[in-house]
Length: 155
Image (cartoon, rainbow, N blue to C red; front, side):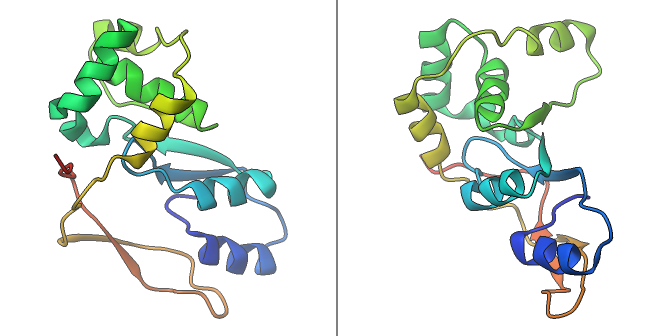
């Protein structure tokens, strides 16, 4: 599954014969749906975090750059580690073999204080021109959820 919210999952679980194994979600610093992550964990549904580097927008954030520098890592490494510490399977996108190797070098731990700061980042806008359908079982939202290609972050 991809992009199922709690209400969508509740509808699905009410009608499904098997519990889904994975829910792919947009998860990154600035977009950490804690309640949904906790719900998935409680139901035994693994979350795959796609776009852990926030479609690249987070690379320009000075606070995140400073934090990555304190850890001696790149911003992508910090962001990937953040999603791992949230309990997700991180799915960064790259076709560059050097970046793939670098993205795998996340054997450090982000402090609780820094995790709170990353989770508290505010991704302002994903645009309004993109949407995707989700499961529309009995009583569910059955609608389309707005998402877009690239967030902007509050200064």
